[in-house]
Amino acid sequence: MSWSAKQYVAFEDERTRPVRDLLSALPDIEARSAMDLGCGPGNSTEVLAARFPDAVVRGLDSSSDMIDAARRRLPNVQFEIGGIEEWKDPGPFDVILANAVLQWVPDHAGLLPKLVAKLASGGGLAIQMPDNLDGPAHRLMREVAADGPWAHALAGASAVRTPIGDANGYYELLRALCTKVDIWRTTYHHPMRDGAAYKRNASILRAPRRRSAASNAKGAIKPRATVKGPRLTPAWCGGPPRRTDAAVPGRDRGRSVRR
Image 1 (cartoon, rainbow, N blue to C red):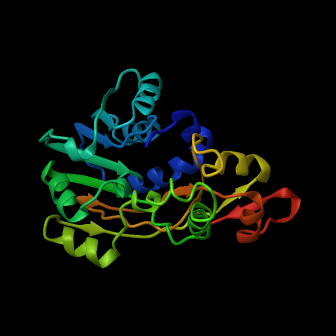
Image 2: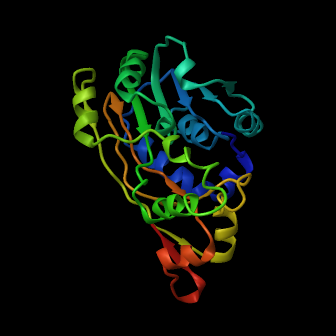
């Protein structure tokens, strides 16, 4: 799977709002080292550096296109290409941020304790994960993927993302490892000013080489404390306009509200 930094930042404010909310909930840690896992084009890294200005901040992402964009954006931050599953740095880190990335990484039961183990005493793990697979946009994507000449090629696409567990499961996993665990869910509603442009940007299934637009957000699970945890980000991919309009009716003045 390839990622486009240009497409990702087309809806940067919508994509960045969850990480701002997440990091604002962290206590005032005297952070000297901070790591942004799945840093993307650097928008979340920028928020992390602003939240902890005395920390040496680094970023990791598996996409070379994302890392190139992040380096242009924040030339004084060290970024490296790599996957979270292969990340071997033992730390310790005062803050580890994983914004909208762990839904692509399997085995949370094994992964999260490993991340906690990389924290310094009193450190914080802040995680945000989209939990919107049951939303109308994603249901529509699955319908479109299964109904057309592309069905065979997309047959395994729905298995790429790791299913998000429930809040109780994450709490039980983390409470023995952390002094405090804070988990919450948030739904973001984004009015779309230009429905036609939105559909062009969102039509990843009609034009597989183009990235999906972020416009939709649904709940979030966030372990917080010395670990802050998962939660939701806007993410939306649409099918043909006819089906999109049927799933989410437009509003007056040419604006549609996606959820």
